[in-house]
Image (cartoon, helix red, strand yellow):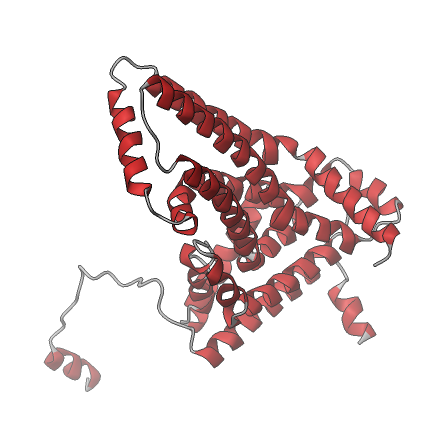
Length: 63
Length: 283
């Protein structure tokens, strides 16, 4: 425990990293348990859609 | 907590208000002054008859409404002050611990019988409870002056108010609602307060960029590596004003004692603890 404390409080960067990791970890665990996670930002462009011929894709896969 | 510790904490609160009086008292006073000047300027225009009509219409609309139902209408008059309070609080949170290190006053305060925990807690209490009190006090002065102006206009334009005193009573209830809303939003946004304090204690320069940059970077990395958006969803779940703005007193228990509020307070406390430990590292 003492070693861990010394490691965390070694310098400002280790402390910041530990706090942020703990914070994000709790958010992820809480989000998983409560089903909070959702797609907030949709990074796909709805105005741009590639419709590739399925035959062509199959031919590429069997090449 | 003994009387000495209470006195120390009270002194720290006074110090925060004294050092940031322009932010917490000056800024709302200037806004109140601007609003008063704008009202006077409109009222003194030659074609200000519409203002008399508006007052008459408002008086008729408010007639018969109980004070508690009238208060939410007046709440909107305080909205610019609430927004200003949020802006001032963000500036304060980002600069307070950073400024302590920059002007080396941290050495003085650490030589005093004041722990880092007490100092950071005094800053949190300043944002959560004391700064809203200053805003409400300025609003009280504005409401008193506005009530006087409306009475003077009533005499000048020969208006007969039916619900004047009820509106005055409602404005006092509104002040209470505004204060409670500000306290409630501070508790609800405690993770944000903790985040800003953490980076205020950490950054060697530009804490604002560090705080925003780190949040954006973590969200971006999460989406890129794990293809999830827990962090973005967490931020979004804290961004709805309806969750912490109060229009009725009956809403208080439901809004305070719920799971989302508790998890927010727990995570905010984690970040505030991080900010407290961060004060060990002085440049």
